[in-house]
Amino acid sequence: MSPTILFVGGGSLGHVVPSMAVAEQIRCLHPSARMVFVCAKRADEMQMLERAGHTFSVLRAPPSSLSLASLFFPIAFVRACLCARKILQREKPTVIFSKGGYVSVPMCVVAWLQKIPIVHHESDSVLSLSSRLISRLATVVCAGFPQTIWPEGVKRKVVVTGHPVRAEIASGSVSAGQRITGFSGRRSVVLIIGGSQGSVALNQAVAKALPSLLDLADIIHLTGKGKMNAVHHARYFVRPSMSEELPHLYALADIVVSRAGAGVLSELAVLQKAVLTVPLAGVAHDHQVCNAKILETKGALELLPQERIHLLPEVLKNLLGHRKRLLALGKALHACFPVDAAKRIALLLLAEVQRARIESPPAPPPSS
Image (cartoon, rainbow, N blue to C red; front, side, top):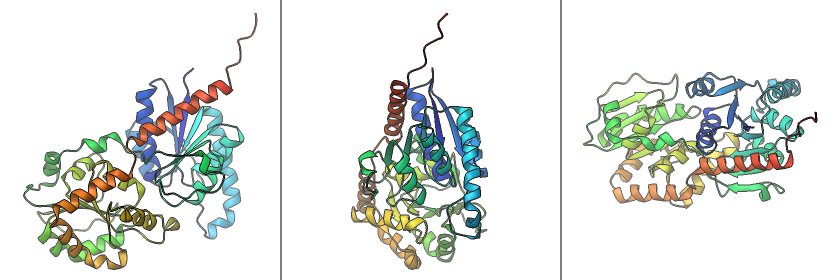
């Protein structure tokens, strides 16, 4: 009988995209495995899963943020657990892969009560509230950062796998990037990615410094949905976001200005890209600042605190003038993340499938 692997995570694409990378590897290693997803009721998550042809369910779960809504958190959480139980009864998963976020919590709590093995992945160097809980329930815990500090009782379950990255990220070409942007290839190219949460301050800084930036290089600017400015310039390519074309933009860039989420840093590590990071401070236990500081100490990126973001043109000018420095940053970033993270996690999931079969052999057929 083919196993069923249930992937759960939601609240941002950063919880869904890595799971899809793991699913790709499982499809290669175990083609008969059945894979289903559970995500938040967010258009971007559902559309991405639909485009990839994945079967998925939506789980309405309460976020853990403190607000007036948290007065109703217990009721909402119980409802989410009841919904999670229905999904588990319908899908009958052999193992759960949790990518974290508030959607994962009720699903993993109910799965743990039903003794379904859980493999959990934490991307960042600082644990979220959901990861603190789920890591205690999980059979195996996968770490994206080697330096993550885990609670006592969890360390023995931790395997450093790195962060799963989609295979197509490495398929970009410089020529395709030039066709998309219209850039000639005669100037340096800077790619600026603000991310979904922290793009406003970065977008404002780019808009203010754009003349200086265009003197340095051709600029690709991904502003975030609903935040695109109306500037038009032959050397300034601006879009809210890019999906299928993103690998080509990565390939074209000499340096990437980015926030410091584990997802984008892992993608850039695969490509050995030089990164100037402006971490978003004050969100989710300051995980972006911690990520950036850890990698800065290893010489794997340049860190520009947001309060000094007005220095962006000056810092970029210095970096673009030292090609060897850019190459060294890319190589150091690549060395900080284990390669083949998606395959490593897929093998761990399939090992849990095998263990579950040994511990729970199928019932013998009824005697005639």
